[in-house]
Image (tube, rainbow, N blue to C red; front, side, top):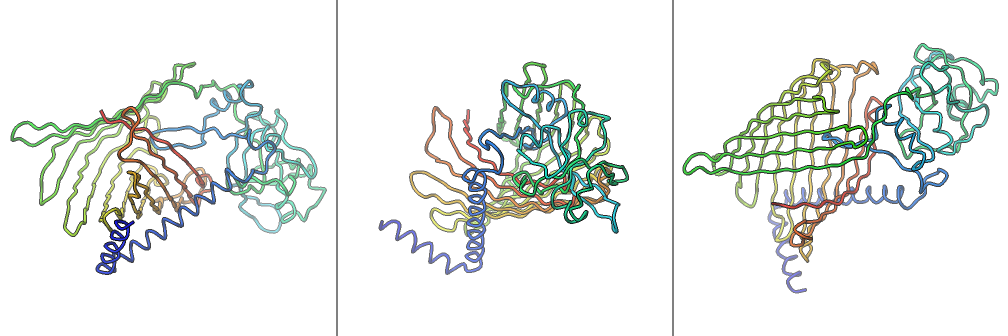
Length: 456
């Protein structure tokens, strides 16, 4: 207890001597507490409160993973395969949100449309006020263009007219026949903004299925070669390999950074040539090459600064619209706030040049965090960051310019002096919220990860 009191007194004296940094630390802690509150709110909503669906403990969301992250997107072939697994799942449904233009009535309006497969309403227990939902025939490619209205849209734009069933409405220039109205108690807020209406997805059921089951392997390795008086050469290699067993379908990437390391101006400078190759289905998907420079230095009073400059060219197979260059600048600072507390901040600026102006963008990121050792070797860390991404032109499928605002809060903890058979465990909880002018890119994600790392 006496040691704890001494630590607190020492930290308080440092706070008084560095008022500006103290204000920044308090702001970081406030943001961290807010992030934890938000994370608990998500946990409460997702885990503690049941979702408004029949048998919520049996509802699952399929996710795909890639080097760029994870998400619920899937190809029609994968969905067809999941739907065939009748011994594992009772119903499988596909859905996504899009935007359509309604041109009927006294004034036009942009509506949020949910593209869903025929099993969607049965899986979520949706009731209809009148009419019906989609049939399997209407959900096939070339099927009839029909629509099911939400209760809100039915009452707001059509004055709850019971004669709306069977009438045609114009959506983005195409006629759709209204076949039903969903009950007002249908709530899918767990999966994003509520659509104003629903239309059939009409995916091709004859697409070749690919399993999501297989083997996974990944590794990172780095080494510095010292050659007696010459510049040391740093080599870092990394890669991932995943094999789908039933269709022998591979998804793999490999990359390397190689370059000299300098002791420069009281710090360390590492320059490197970079390269990455990704294969998807045994065919090349992405080839990326470029150069990077990393610099870090202790500048006094406990401050450590680091910076990265990166330039690379991306060449996508069959996607010339997104081919182009990426340039990134990243910077970070950290400083001890006390014997057992470390504060840090980071910022980044990215510029992407693509052949299609709708795919080219600027992205800026800013974040802060705090790391604290609380005893027994445990080190919890809280961070929050915000990013803004703005594209140069309109995205062709949507006819509008994409602008994203992303907010992410994270909490992690690990035990620095504890391992199991050489593996060090850690826990990381992340909440991400992305708002976009293009509804398709709206995202609300809660993720918990348990990691095991081993150094060889």
